[in-house]
Image 1 (cartoon, helix red, strand yellow):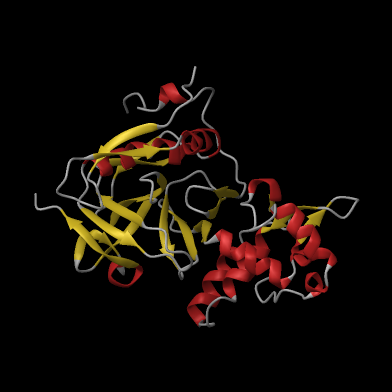
Image 2 (cartoon, helix red, strand yellow):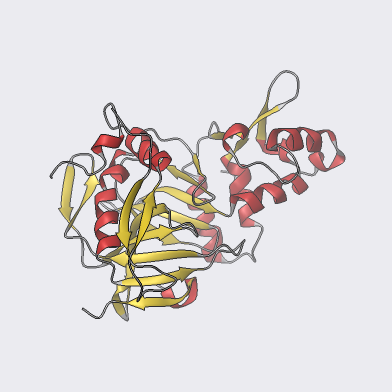
Length: 138
Length: 165
C-alpha cells in the first residue's frame, strides 16, 4: 500500500551550495500522477534522483511571469527509460534536467539538448536561465 | 532495472493517458500524446515542445505561467473557447485558449508561429481542462469569476485564433 507522504532526496542547497545538503521533495501528487498517467516519466524519476544526488550544474530559473525563485539541476544518468519497459544509454547530446520550485520541490524533469560550450548545460542556458549558481568541480 | 525507489508510494499498474494536466507544482499545463521520454524544445518563455526521444517528432508540450494566463484569459473573454453546463456555468477551458493567450503575449516571429502551429496540430478539439483542476483566480474561484466574466461584455471579446487548424 502506498504511503501518504512525499519522498525526499538529499541534494545541494541552491541558495548556499557550500552548506550542508538539504532534502529535495518529490511531491506525492507528482509521483501518483506520473505512475498513473505517464509511466515513462515515473520510471525516469530514477534519473531525476540520480541527477539531484550527482548534480553537475545548478541554474537559477527565470520565468516569463512571476518572480518565485526556481532552479534547474543538470546531470547525466547512465541509462534512462525511452518508452514503456525500454531502457537505453543516456545520449551524449542530451543532458537531464530536474526543475525545483522555491520550496525545493521537483515540478519537472526531462531531457534537454546540450549547449555547444558545455556538455552539462542545456542549450541556450545563457539566455533562458537567470545564471549559473553552482558547477561541479569533480 | 532494479526496483523503483518509489514503488512503495504507489499502487496498481503504471499507465498512460494522453490528457492535459495542470501541474500545480510548476504552475504549468503539460500535454503528452505518447508514452515516451521527451526532449525539451523551448519555443519561448511560455511554450516548450516535447519531442520524442526516439523519433524527435513532437508529442506534446508545456505551457508555463498558467496563473497569469488565466487572468489574461479572463480579460479576453473565456467564453470563446470553453465548455459549459446547461445553466451556463463554465466547466472547462480548451487547451486552445491557453495556446492562444500564450501566443499573443509576445511579438510574432516565424519561429514562434511555427512552434505554436506545431503543437496546435497535436491538440484534439476535445482537449479541455476542468476549471476545478485549474488554480483559483485572484479574489474568487476560477469558476465563479469565469461565470461572472462570461456574463459581462468582456466575455464576448473574441480571442484571436491564428493557430486553429
